[in-house]
Image (cartoon, rainbow, N blue to C red; front, side, top):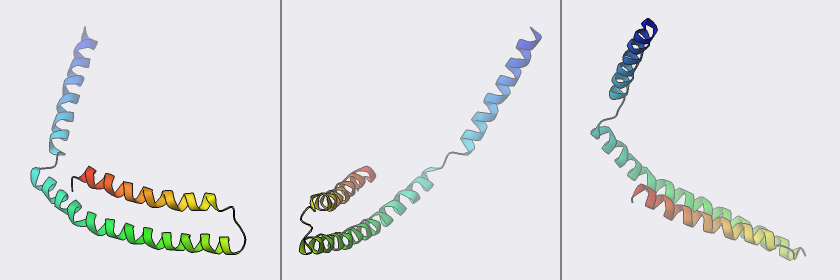
Length: 103
């Protein structure tokens, strides 16, 4: 019986501590709006940067495939498919992230 009372006291104290710590750790509405505007501001800059990097890597990939074709390596299907699907991946991820962030 004494062990049960001690266990209940410890359990009640632990629950009270967890509730007080979790209540103090929650962000407020103003912080949420601040972070939301920060995400909106940075998203368009980062999406433009990713598209520019994708365009540069696409041009370099196209040149690499062209050089391989001109040097006589006619089995370049894997390279072409890799560059093609990486471009599709960048486009689809941009659409997906725009929908995820609600922009």
